[in-house]
Length: 431
Image 1 (cartoon, one colour):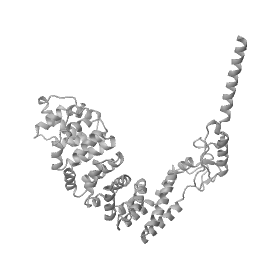
Image 2 (image 1 turned 180 degrees about the vertical axis):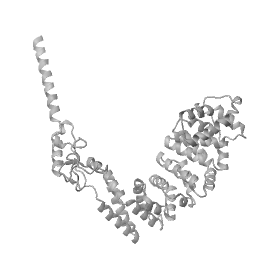
Image 3 (image 1 turned 90 degrees about the vertical axis):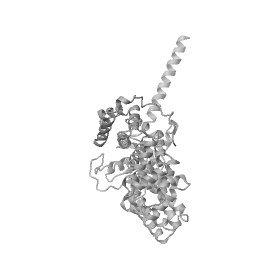
C-alpha cells in the first residue's frame, strides 16, 4: 500500500513537472518576433533601409535621439523612411492567437501614422476655411486633428512639428472676432486641441494675444462649461502679459477660478497667470490692489493650507508680489493666519517656496511693529531661519533671512517661543 501510494505521488510529480516544462517551452517568444532595441515582442514592426525590422516606437526614439546608424548593422542610414512589415506583424498575430490559451493577447493591427504632409494639407484647408468664414468646414478639420492626436503620441508630435498650433491660434482669433456665441462649438474644439500643443511658438502666442482672442478666453473662463474653463486657464498663462492686463474682466475671472477650483491643474495655471500680472505687467501695482480688493489674499492662504506642492509654491509667489504694494501688505498683516502659516511652510515644501516665504516675512516684519516681531518669534521663525542658513539657500533668500535674524534678535528676550508645527485649527480663518 505504501509502495503503491509512493509510486502514485512520484508519477504525479513527474507529470506535473513535465507539464510545467512544456508550458515554459511553448510560451517562449520566437527570437525574430523580438525588437532588437527593446527586446520586447514587437507590436508595430517596421523595416529600415538596411533590411532590419524593429518595433516602431523603439526605432523612432532611436532616430529622434540623434542616432544616424542602424542599431544592429551600425550602417549609416541613407534614408530615415520606415516601412511597415506586414508579413512579420501577421506572423506575430497568428502566433498570439495560437498561444491565447496561455494568456497571450493578440496584438491589434496598428493604425498607419499620419505624415507631416497630411497635417500641412489639413492646416492649409483650415486657413482657407477661416478666410471664407466657413465655421462647419473648419470644425470638421479641427475634429480630424483631434482624432489623429488620440491615436498615438507620435501623431501628436507630428501635428505640433507641422506648426498646427499657430494655425489653430489663427482660427481661434479669426472666429473670436465675430460673435463668440455664434461659433462657440468650434471655439471650444480649438481650445481643447490647443492645450496639448503648448508652447505655441511666437506666431501662435501673437495670435492668441490679440484683443479678440483674449476677450474670448476670458469669456470661456467665466463660463459654465468646466472643460472650456480649464482649457482657457491653461492657455491664458501663455499669452502676452502686457496685452492681457488690458482686458477688463480678467482679474475677476481669475479670482473666480481660484475661488471655485476645477482641479489642481487649472488652479496652478490661474496662479501662474496672476503671478505674471502682478510681477510683470506695466500697471502691476494697480492690478495687485484690484486682486486684494476681490479677496485674493484669503484665497491664497487657503490654497497654501490645502494645496499640493505646485499650488503652494505659486500661491506663495503671488502672495510675495502682493506684499510689494502697501494695501496688499496691510491686508496680509491683518490676517491672523498669514504669519504663522507662512512660517510653518518654511523648509516644508521646496527651496522655491522657502524663498518666497522668507521674502514675504521680510516685507511684513517691520521694526516699528513690535507685536508682529514678537509673534514671529513665538511661532519659531528665528529657529527656522537659523536652520535654513545652515542647510543652504540662494543669495537673495540668504540676504533676507540674515536681515530678519538681525531684526528679531533684539526681541528674543520678550518672546516665549512655541512649536511652529502645531496645527492652526484654533485660529479663526477670515475666509
